[in-house]
Image (tube, rainbow, N blue to C red; front, side, top):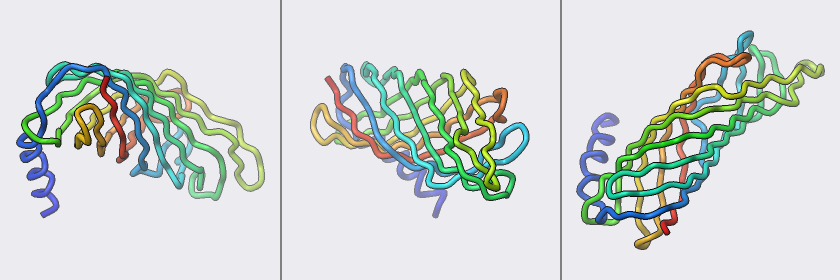
Length: 191
């Protein structure tokens, strides 16, 4: 059943969307990270309470759209190599995304997207066993992402979305290659 439900959702979404159009838009939202570990060159970090937010600006042309997007995530450090620690783990990513939107005749639309960009990952304010540990930071690490979202048009120019994203960041100086998955709820305004 778990495998059938996503297939039914995907196959039925193309049957329910409104007519495609042309417009500039702003898209933004918040969500939760589904992973709670990241590896550095020397250890594994476990974090808790991970969340993310995103904002994008783009242009829709019929069934296609292009978007510049800022994605940020935050998590509280819980342990460093299985030893209790505290600190702030943040990631900031700028992406250029391309989407295909499956429009038809209702208020729902399925969007499939992919993009590439750069990420900055930081671990700051880290304390382990009462001792301050040096901050870690990687900048300009190449990143790619894949996105699937389901939108619902509240009006002709306003829609809500539920978005699933897989974000992969390549090796940096301090952090190993890592992936993030998240689910978020958003709002899109067309102009």
